[in-house]
Length: 200
Image (cartoon, rainbow, N blue to C red; front, side, top):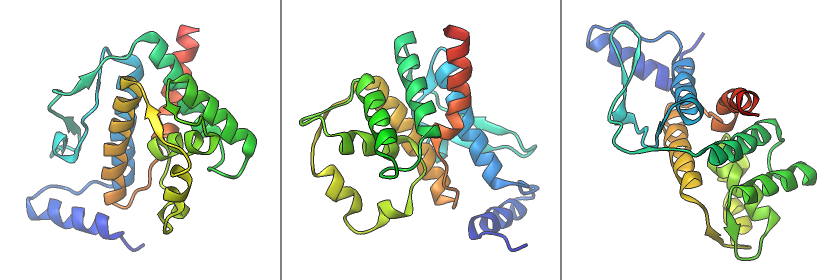
């Protein structure tokens, strides 16, 4: 089976320094994403700055996370709101497929405190997916996102949404750069469900 370009690069890099290459880069990347979801719901704080320089692949195959200098604490209410949003995003079809699903995503996004000037369901629904879901090919088409987002302006979003979105953006960027399109909402939803079960 042919290796993806990113797998081949990593394999060659590991070999050049005498390390055994990872067997499944995609699974390693998903584990890094999941760890941050676990932190979000079950740790005192989560690292909102998981850029590639803060993630190490150790010689024995373990993953090292360093530089916890930009962490955020979530209040119980904030965890509950994010949990509901992540679960809904993980279970919803992509944007524009179902008006009902889009309206539910909009409601969950509004519940988190995200506001737009005109309360546009299109903008609020797409905003959440842009922040936490897989990158969809249609988003990369010329002016697709611009045409929707230009209908309204996001005027306010709370710090906890900003920090969760920053964390997701950095993780998805890392994964996408290594040819893995990952949905943080899908990877974090199991922790969100477990947290909601444990906290009512």
